[in-house]
Structure formats: C-alpha cells, structure tokens
Length: 254
View 1 (cartoon, rainbow, N blue to C red):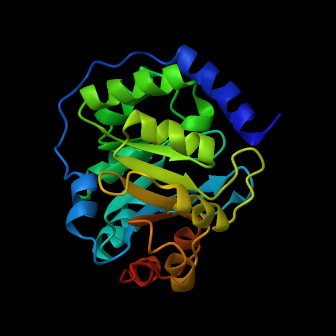
View 2 (cartoon, one colour):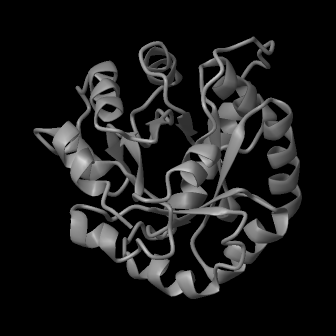
C-alpha cells in the first residue's frame, strides 16, 4: 500500500466517525488569489506549520504554532498553511484554530479532504483556503467538493503532481493549482516535477500556479520563478533556527 492509500484508508475511518458541524460565521480574510494577482513582482510564499511527516518522522513536534505563524506573517508570507492531520503529520484542528486567532493573512487547512464534513470543520476553525488533492479523489468527488468549498466561501488549492492531474485541475477551472514536487505514493521529492509541468500550464492568464515541496534556498525557488507565482515551504522553515529570515530569503524577485 502506498503512503497515499494508507492515509486515505485512515481518513475514511476518521470521516465516518466525524460529526457534521453547524456552519459558523468566521473572520473574513483576504483572498490569496487576489494577493498573488496584485503582487507579481515577487515569488510569494505559503509558509507551512508542519510538525512531522510519514517519510521524515518528527520534524518539530514541540513547536509553538502561534509563534511560528506570527514569524511567518512578519516575514511577509502571503499565506500560512497548517497541517491538521493527526496520525501521519502530528497536527490538529486546534493548531489551525489557534493560529487563526493571531494572524490576518489567508490560512490554508492542509489535510487529506474527502468529505464536506472536513470543509465545514476547516472553515469553522478559521481556514480561508482548503486543499483538494486530485490523486486522492475521483473527478466526481473533486468537482463536488470544489463546489461545496466555494459555497462555504473558501478558496481551493487543487493539488496535482503529473500531467493528467494537471489537466483535470485546469478543466475544473481552478484558480489556484499547486504542483506537488513530492510523489504521494513514494514521498520522493524533486523540483524537476514543477519544471517539467511548467511547459504544460495552459491557464496562466487566469490561474495562479504554486510549486510545492523541496525548497530550501533561493536557488531552488529561482528554478520555478518564471512560471509559478508562489512556493509552498514547510519542512525547511520548520528546521530553521531563524524561520523569519529564512522565509524572507525565499521571497525572491521574479
């Protein structure tokens, strides 16, 4: 069983026992899509709070998510991603709720979303963006969840990692498409994935493309700066003694 298959099997059990929350009114956050459109001069950053991963194990399990998030915001991150998966990434929905109380930038709920229950929970916890992974969903599920997220007022980052998935996301009309450099079956990482798919991005006028995973320094970001508007970085920032400065360094001019 691949990492993704194992995670989805667990997620199905979680969702089956999850209560449907009543939809709450939450704080309005800026649109990340509009932010990217209005600030094209720099590569923008989605800075992630990531305690652990299935492939790397513990990264920073004792981190204070509030302090980390505030440093990211101070560094100019365009959005902050909070991993909320408990079993594999040691995150929690509480991390997202707490971060939502102290920062004003767009917030991404990073999880393996397969149900509207999770969308409502993410929104109630303060998220303004949710992640939908093409590899984890049928086209029907993806379309239904995308529409449900928009009805809740959420922006959607649709994640792909090969050409077939990219075309599915583009056919959906996604405004935010993330190219994951991490293979979700093996968890191997290569920025070359984004470089190869850069030649196939067909909605550049209307869609913002984000390259995800594998970025440690300016030179890494420079590799994708021509074709992508932002990068998503988690592990490298979590391991830094000065995450604020590290985050600033990744926001290079395009």
